[in-house]
Image (tube, rainbow, N blue to C red; front, side):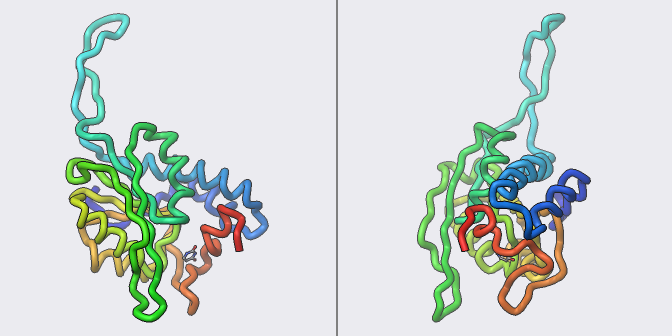
Amino acid sequence: MSEHLTIVDHPLVQHKLTLMRDQGTSTAVFRQLLREISTLLAYEVTRGLAMTTRTIDTPIMEMEAPVLDGRKLALVSILRAGNGLLDGMLDLIPSARVGFVGLYRDEETLRPVQYYCKLPNELDERLVIAVDPMLATGNSSAAAIDLIKEKGAKNIRFLCLLAAPEGVARMKEAHPDVPIVTAALDEKLNEKGYIIPGLGDAGDRMFGTK
Ligand code: URA
């Protein structure tokens, strides 16, 4: 992947995203749409994976057929909202390894603090796709990528549903080597750090909390 930011403008993705943004969409439908859209985004974020060939026998003849090369890729969910993207991605990449990173914001220093980290082994040999639906300020995403790099990952992509220009700029400054794939680049952040027009709090909408 050479572009730093890829916006997936496929009509199905854009239609589903509009339904998700609508505040009248129920938790159940929001969750179902998130599963569907994450499968479509998984298709885009895995573009250009390394390939090799394997000799197989079709019913007609032997052939050298293309297969994915290298170790199973790793999906890393940035808790908690990242979990909403996992199921749809695993539908498409069922043998992916899965890790979790949890961060909270220290109210005094305002810096992200790690409270949980469990990652697959041999990260240096895998493509790692970090997932979080909302790239807002970019501070927690950049900190999560710091952590994933500290654990050895060298080939990382970042997948989100919505991005704010502020978050994209922060990620580009901190991790210019990490391409971002998103369904939309929204206008900006409001004073509370929400993406506008956005879809509200992604975690609350997918889990039905407030
Ligand atoms: N996180 C969310 O869930 N929504 C936003 O708009 C920004 C960050």
